[in-house]
Length: 217
Image (tube, rainbow, N blue to C red; front, side, top):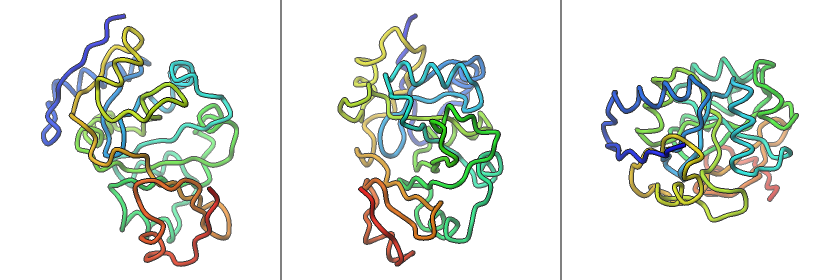
């Protein structure tokens, strides 16, 4: 398989280029693209074979769930049972941005995506390429960092190419990612919100919005 690296305008992505990527996604392909945090590998979250391939390409343990990216709040109706007030407050303050929220999933989300857990992590990235891609695809994308599990975080398209040359059809090159670190992950499925990964958003900033946050790192 030939891997195409396509340079794409980070402020005004070409609709033709996005349509090419969307066609690949609809056919079950995995593609790589920049977000605000890192480069990601993405696929149709509701395609069983595509999700299986995503795990395989990354050599990701089946015990580690895959998160989703959305481009609008309406897409959450497809994936979570409820979007409570506390989640709405966090989204209002940190989306689009580097905050991944975990909530109870709907049955439509395959257990394969969540590694059998009853919850799903998701966020809205602050990157116009990623947002435009998800918006035009009109459905959440299952996404994980574009590296082999355990390797350095990918912040450029060339790093993606080194890992996935001749394994995926397309890499969008939108330059170096803005934040160059992963998202902060907060679990809202329990009585007390818990930060389970400290990333680009600081705990101190989260506590300005929701003081009652626990930490489980």
